[in-house]
Amino acid sequence: MTEPLPTTDLKQLSEDALSALQVLDTSDPGAVEKWRVEFLGRNGRLTTVLRGLGALPAEQRREAGAAANSLKEQLEQRLEEKRTQTLAAQAARAESLDISLPGRRMRRGRLHPSTQIIREICSAFNEMGFQTVEGPEVEWERYNFDLLNIPRDHPARDKWDTIWIEQPESRRPPDGQRILLRTHTSPMQGRVMERQQPPVRVIVPGKCYRFEATDATHEWQFHQVEGLVVDEGVTFADLKGTLYEFARRIFGANRRVRFRCDFFPFVEPGVDMSIDCFGCDGKGCRICKNSGWIEIMGAGMVHPKVLAAVGYDTARYTGFAFGMGPERIAMLRYGIEDIRHFFSNDLRFLSQF
Ligand code: DAH
Image 1 (tube, rainbow, N blue to C red):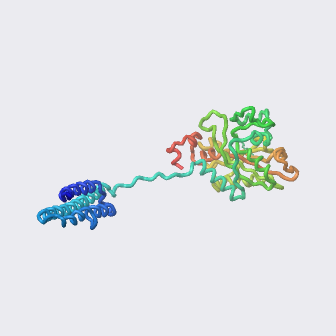
Image 2 (spheres, rainbow, N blue to C red):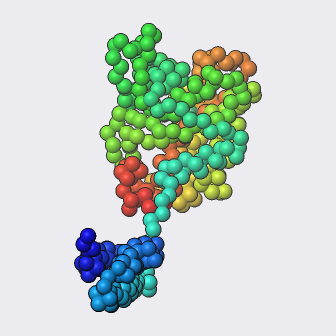
């Protein structure tokens, strides 16, 4: 029987140990320990070789023993070297981190200016007892027009340039109702009244769309905030008092308001409301185009036909409604000159708010 020569074993062992050391992550104590156990440990490969020496003739034993011991020393030394190298590399990396450099600024997100003004408007009304409700942007013409006293084929519909949604013939309901992108938030009047009896006191923020060429004051998409109050004994004085209080909250405590006749099919009488210019206190400036007044919304007493259409008792109940464009209000307040900024997603504009 021929024993393998211990020196051959040692050579192989040395190669194995060194190549394992080369890829060893010496900053990981677990990995280092594993390496040590495998090659230098009490049951490791080197010890196994040393134990086998007893069987050798004395001369060879001494030689092989010396070789094994020197290999042990060599491996331990190489491990130490490798450790030092790793530490040095780490230190070098740490030095390249200049902690005196100013940090990179984190960009903070914020709410869209439309959202900010909408929330402000709604909370002004919430504090006066209005409940916020929302409705669909894709709407039946019944709610957008019919229930609001704007009959089909009536010229009043021209006021709202409508984006219609095509429906295949087979999907059209039997009553011929068509669908559209709502042109205002007023359709929520019918939706709210249909499902509850008075008292009604709601505020309705939402997105609207119109088939419209865009310019500095017209967008094909924009927001509106609608309000509706219906109860026994609601009068025009309630409308004035509520909207006056709103204007003071949003535009400042000294505001005066002015109501002028206007026409909307769903109110009678209908008005538009202006505030005296907060830029010049009514003296005349760029914001108010020298008139001293700024128009901020449409409003009126809910038309009895609108109340009747949802089955309300018009002998018992009256109400008022109003609608405004929050983008327009934000433009006035912040001196924004072009409504198209709101939906162009330009951070130079958005990050000002
Ligand atoms: N819906 C109207 C529009 O889009 C705005 C409006 C006017 C709403 C008078 C109202 C109102 O509720 O009473 O032009």
